[in-house]
Length: 368
Image 1 (cartoon, helix red, strand yellow):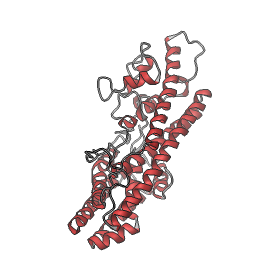
Image 2: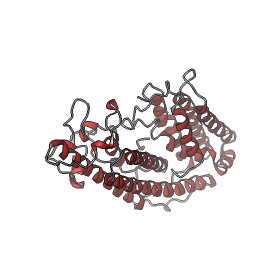
Image 3: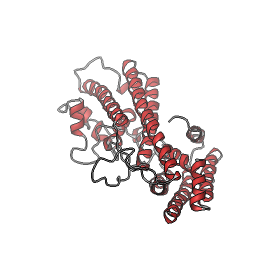
Image 4: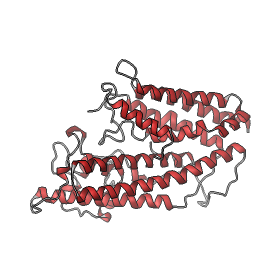
């Protein structure tokens, strides 16, 4: 099982991902509860910005919201296209490509979700429902006939899978990213699945043959549902709260010093895949795309200029926190088992960034 503390082999791959994200390549966290809108009619232009800083922060988020939601939808389209090829030509190579497409689509989604949270909104909860019970979807260690895949009384179609989702418990996840993740990787205790469990059987009359056909149909249907849901999310004319900059920066502080900090701490444990992406064992799943969106705020020069006008030294301290975070990320390149794990170093830097975002928000509030 992959670990941060025991393997240097992971570091180049993680560093490449970090470099990609921090270079703004076009690539969690449960969303905060949106602030109430009693009339339910608030729209993107209903509340004018109160200051230059408000205008700048809101403009950045509006641009990122459009871009990240579009990218998430396109990544889901690409995932389903890759999956279609895999089901037509079932090989380990095509399975690996499908898994990669899942990782990309999930990262894109997490970036879009982060921006939505900063704006004061939410995303469709079924898209990324977690925690998820893998045995509810398919066979699990010690239970070879468990899950929807093996229960022939349950029809494999969109309506049925939606009906099974969180039927009696929130962990009974039958649709969304993590149902697909379990189907593609299986249980981490047994290691990643091979393509053979998806290959069209010659004899479809056996229980094993029927299960394989159902697994293939489950993959196809679940991906189609995910694709549809993300399309709806992209095209929806969602109300935007147009929060003042101080509230947005306060949300950024809570996100970086709260949810993302806990993810980094979890990643510093022995099991690098512990947490949201347990099945794929993807390190720091969801944290890096969210972090990229936060750094866009911390690094924006117009925001720093406005903060210098509003809060004096706040812009300098926020910039210092951003620089510290970048330094910790770059340290991943040379980290080894004799030093604090990359995730632990990241946690310290995230804590600092969260504190500085919060102080910036307080300074603006006191100044207004």
